[in-house]
Image (tube, rainbow, N blue to C red; front, top):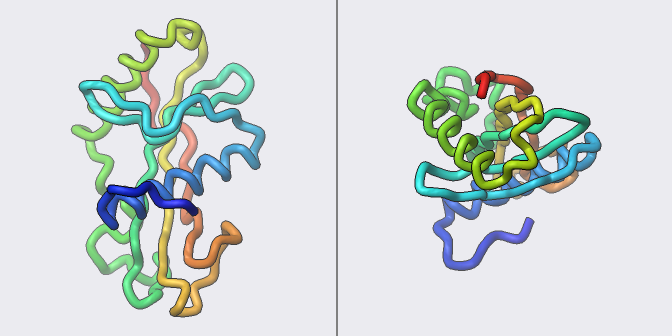
Amino acid sequence: MDPSPGRTSRQRIGDSGEELVAHHLLSQHWQIVAQQWRCRWGELDVVAHKGSTLAFVEVKTRAVADGIPLHLAQQFRDPSGLGAIGSRKREKIIKTAQAFLATHPGWTEWHCRFDIALVQHRDPALGATSSSGIPGWSLYRYIPAAFEVEF
C-alpha cells in the first residue's frame, strides 16, 4: 500500500484501507468509477459498478491495538468502525452521492446502493495474519446494501 504524502498517519491508514477495498472489489469483478471523490458535502470513499448496480462504498479502517482480533475485541469502543456510520453520516453520504450523480448524469438510471466495508489494520510485527495478502491488513467485513435510498 502506497500511503499518500502530506497526510496524517490516520489519513494514510484510511487511504490504505480504501485502496484495499478497491482491490477487493476489482477481484469481485467490479469496476472502480471513483475513489476519494469530493464535493462540498463530503467525500465518497469508493464508487464502483457491476452489472446495472452502482455502489457507493463507505470504508472504515480501524487499527487494532496489540494485535487483538476484532471478533475478540467487542468490549472495546467500536473496534470495527460500524458505529461511526450513524444517521448523520448516512445523510452526508447520501447527499454526497446525489452530488456525484448530478455531476455524472450517465449513472442516474443505475440501481444505486450504499455498501459499508470494515477494514482491520494490525501491526505486522505482532504476527498479524491477513486475508488480503498484505501483512497486517484485512477486510474484516463487507456489507452490501447496508442501506438503500430511492433517488
